[in-house]
Image 1 (cartoon, rainbow, N blue to C red):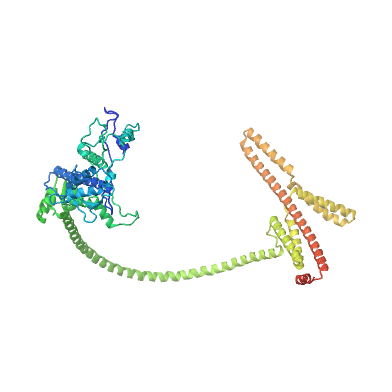
Image 2 (cartoon, one colour):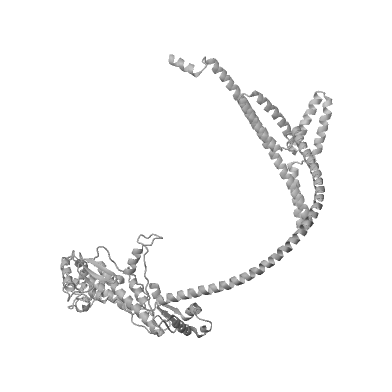
Length: 638
């Protein structure tokens, strides 16, 4: 709210920086209060609600009257329940409830205060106030007031004490002279005048704070003065009202307490507001909208006169007067009952028009359906003739297709037999090849994995003393080893080792003078020497790569990019050969390491087996007992 108010302050356009051209305020009040025990606070709150309700009723009637005057329509004053008597009873000066409460200055005068109220407002019929209620039971502590929302009974316990100002003069003066703006504003001069409950003996020279120097201004007087200031400020503004209704008191969703909602509406003055609104012209609608909605009640030539013609025709037909509705400059004003009647008539007119349109539509539909049935019958006869012709053609075509498809079927069967025989031949060839060479589809790496698995199986067979299975596994391992040697990838290092091995065998054969063995060995050595150029050494491969890269760099330096592109392919090929050679060397080294590890484990396992057998034999020789039970029995006997 402060930001909105600040936005209305214009420093430009010839106005000062602090000149305000408009304000917006928000007044938040809960509403009427009525509990089982109502005290001084409920009396002040209900007094404020009475004053605000009277302002709201006057404002609502004023708006109605201003609208009627602007539209220049005839209207009669609306009667409503004026709560001025209740306001005068509660806070109408010295002869009111709050005025009598201000006269009670001692804290134990609550009962005396009730007796004074009964004497002034509930005694003889001459002085009896129609808004005051004399309580028969507990009359020394309770009194009642008929508010606009209902009767409320107040318990006076603590009324006088709560009404007395408890702050001392010195403390109020000190707070009023505070340098903090908020504190100074709260404890500043009281706006209470002598006619509003202050003491008539107070003068500006006696403290200058708007209160008596002998006794302070009461809480009720301060509240009454603040309420009058609020009402005066509301009279100078253009108020808009928002009524908030709680569906329930437990703050639960999808829960509607009808009794609580009705109580809030009654205490908020909504019932009286609805009654005031319903006694006037409750419904208002623009000329264009009203004519668009209800012009259907006129005939075709009657719609040319506009809203005046509509008003005259409907008034004559429905036998209504201006007391039920009137035409203003821009709006139509209607009573609620007459508006409901118009809605019903318009709905009936729409239904009648719908029935007429329906009858016309059904007639058109019937004529169209008859034409469609005739056309459909003729079309069905034509279809039957065409169907007979198509069936005859279909039978002829079917016979022709049968002969043709039989020929295709016989050809397909013969082709399928041939394909199946070839497929069986391929499968049989693979099975025979698998039987002859069970390791043919395995790579060297797969053979290594299989060799390690069989070695582990051999160890398990030895540990479990399954020597027959161990012999079969050992024979299988021999075949695997031979096949691994055949599948081992060829490298320059392996080739040189094989040549050296053959050379050693030749020398041994010469030493033994087995010359017949030398010729086959020499042939193998010559075939291996022929393979040496196909497997260059690592140094040769690296030098080839370096030379190719140098040629590419020279060609690029000469800007002979075609030669550089062709030489680059040579570099890629040399690099690929080098990488393959390095991978093969690495695989051979890894395979040799795995074989050494496997052999070492086998030797260790055999040694452990021998030691276990020896220890077992020794134990059996040392212990003459056949079971643990016999040993325990011997120990117990000793």
